Structure formats: structure tokens, C-alpha cells
Image 1 (tube, rainbow, N blue to C red):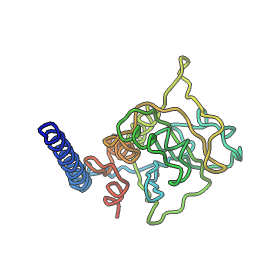
Image 2: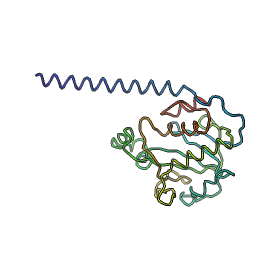
Image 3: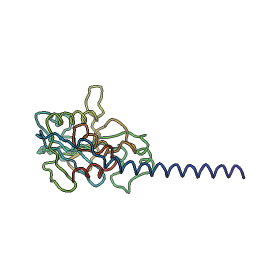
Image 4: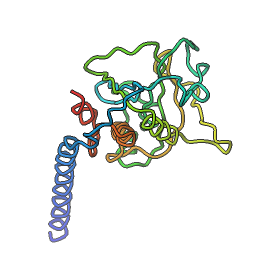
Length: 226
């Protein structure tokens, strides 16, 4: 009976600790998402970028080519199904490789994939999408930044790719969502504390744009651009 009681107490304490963790995570996400950094954005604004969400995940969209960076030197049209080179913008979205490649629909989500993603046990990938035009709306906001800040953004995005011994990025062939996108291996592991949206939020922070102190969800970014 004593062993059974000890087991019950252990189980009860574990449940309470889990609930406390979930509550603290939600409260932290809410409070830190509402806390803005870089509120005094530089007025020297020369280059247009965009933040774009599908309702869950945030992409950073940049010019395909300009005097600072020509992304086609690495992200190639030939890696997409359409191979269409008449494009003007390129979107970047960092995320969990298992989610990206093995979970095209939420109904395809496996418990093992979710567990690995939540605990940082899996690898990551960069999803890139070419666009001919960008339409501003509730889910896509335009941001004007300086050349110096754009250089910082370029470095941040470039450093997020995993590279081989020749410093080339690594295309993940045979995977895409549509006709104009491609996947590449990326650095780091997804977790509850480093999500696709926290990656995008950090991109804004390092390029001195308005951002949340920390946020795991897209609303924590877009609330500062209403």
C-alpha cells in the first residue's frame, strides 16, 4: 500500500509540474510577445522586405536581387518544380525538418515528430519560396529598412543554412509544397523555445526592426505591425 501511495504521489506531482510548466510557458509567451524591442526604428529606409504568415508560420521575404545580395547564386530556380526564373522576391522560413518534410497536412502529424520537435531532438530545414509579386494584406506586412540593416539580415539568414565542406548550402531534393519552393538543410534544432516564429522574430531583431522580446507564435510578431 505504501508503494502504491508513493507511486500516486509521484504521478500527481509530475502532473502538477507539467501543468505549472505549461502555464508558465503560456504566460511567458504572452508577456514577452507583447514586449517590443527596437521601437525607435531608423528613418533611413531604403529596401523593402516583408513578413508573411500562413496563420501559423512566419516567413521573411526579401528582394531576390539587389546591390547587397543576389540570392540566386545559392537558391536556384532549378531546385523548384516550375524552374520559373521570372521572380522578384524570395521568402525564407526556418523550421523543424520533420514537420516540413513529413507533415504536409496536420492529419499527417505523428506523435514522434511532435515530440522530437518540442524537445529539440530533430534537425531543421529552410523552406524557400520564390514570388513574382507580393500582395500586402493582413497576413503580409511591408517593412522598409536601411541598407546597413539589410546587410545584417542577409548575414543572419545566410548563417542559418547548414553548409558542406565547400561552404555550399545543401538542397533537399524531392520535396516541395508547390511549384516555386524548395527546401535546404539548416542549422540548429526546433524546440518549444526556438520555433519557426522565434527564428523570424530574431531576424527582425538583428536587423534592428520592431520585434517581440521573444515569441513562439506568429501573432507575437504581427501585433507590432498593426
